[in-house]
Length: 245
Length: 227
Length: 56
Image 1 (cartoon, rainbow over the protein chains, first blue to last red):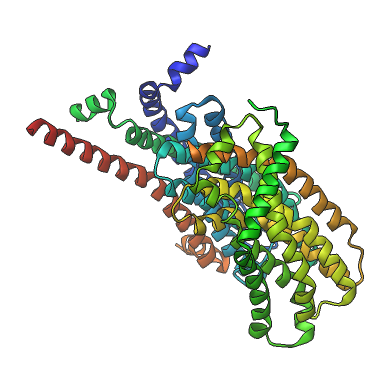
Image 2 (image 1 turned 180 degrees about the vertical axis):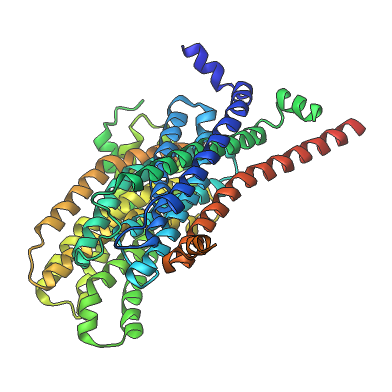
C-alpha cells in the first residue's frame, strides 16, 4: 500500500495518471453543468416568491459550497505536504488556490446579482456574502504569499501554513459574522436561506454541485501538472517529453 | 546544552526584548501616534455630530487599534532576523513555540499596553460614554494580545521578504475580523447599557485559543521562512 | 417563438440571471484556458532552451 502511494506520488506517475483522469473528469463536469444549467434555467418551475431570479442559486449556491470545500482541500493538502514532505500535496494545495478564489468570486458576484432584485441594492452586509468576502481575502492572501516568496518550495510551505491557520479561523469568522449579522439587522434578510426546497428545484442544484466538483478535479489536476513541469523542468523525464514534442 | 530551564530562557528573552525596546523607545511612540491620528481623522471625515460619533465610536477605536497593531507588527522579528538572533533561537534546545510566546509577550507589553493606556483618551474624543470606557479598556486588554499573537504568525511568514509589509496586512487583517466584531460590539452594548458578558467571554476564549495555537503556528512559519 | 422570448426574458430578471450564468461560464472557462496557455508557454521555453543548448 505504502509502496503504491509512493509510486503514485512520483512526479512522472502522477503526470501520466492525471493526464488520463482529466478528460474524464472534464467531460463529465461539462455534461453535468450543462444538464444542471438546462434543468435549472428551463425545467425547474419559477419560485412563487422570487420568480425567475431564484435561478441564480444554481450558480451561487454550488459556487459557495465549492469555495469552502476547495479551501479545506487546500489546507488538507498543505498539511499533508508539510508533515510528510510530499511535493505533490504541496502542488495540489497551491494549485487549488486560484480555483477556490474563482469560486469565491463567483459566489460573491452572483450573490450580489441575486441581491439586487431581492433587496434593491447590489450589496447587503448579509452573513453569507460577508463570509464569502473574507474568504476571498484569505484566498488572495495565500496566493499573494506564494507569489512573493522566491523559492517555490519555501513558498508553498509558507502558503500551506497560512491555509491551515485560515481553516482554523474560518468557522470562527463564519460564526462571528453570522452573530454580528443577526445583531445589526433584523431577521428580514434571510431570503437566501431556503428552509425547504421543492425536489424539482433541488435536483438541478445537486447536479450542478457535482459538476462543479468534477470541474475542480479536472482543473486542479491541469494546474498541478503545469506546476509540476515547471518545478521539474530540469529532470530527465520532462526533458524527454519536450524532445518528443 | 546548558542547564538553562525553558521558563528561565523565556524570562531572559523577555528581558532582552524589553531592554532592546527601551533603547529604541522613540520608535515605539510611532504606532501610538498613528492610533491617535487615525481615530481623530474619523470625526473630520464624518462630521462632528456627537450622536453619530457615539454610534460609530466603538468601531472607530477598534479599527484604529487594528491598524496601529498592524503597523507595529513588522518590528516583532525584523531586527532579530537581520542580525541572526532568530536563527540562534531556532537552534536552541528549548521549544521554539515557547520562545516565540515570550517574544510576542514582550512585543505586546511595549506596543499593546501603551495602546490600551491611551484608549480612554480616544474614547473621550469620540464621545464614548463613561460607562462604556471601562468595557473598552477590557476589550482592548483581551483583544490586543490576540492581535499580537495572530500577527506573529503573519510576521513569521513574511519576515524573509523584502517588501513583506503590504502582504502582511493582507494575511493578517482578515483573521482579525472576529476580534473586531466581538470587541466593538461589546463596547457598543455597554454604551447602550446592555449586558456585555457574552462578548467578553468569547474574546477571552479567543485569547486562550490564540495563546495555545498561534505560537505553534508561528514557530512552524519561522522554520519555513528561515530554511 | 413566444416561449423562447419568455425564456430569455426570465420574468423580468433577465439582466441578473444571464449575467450570473454568463459570468460563471467565463470564469470557469478562464480556469481551463489559463493552465493550457501556461503549459504551452513552458514547453516553448524549454524547447527553445534545448535548441540553444544543442547549438553550443
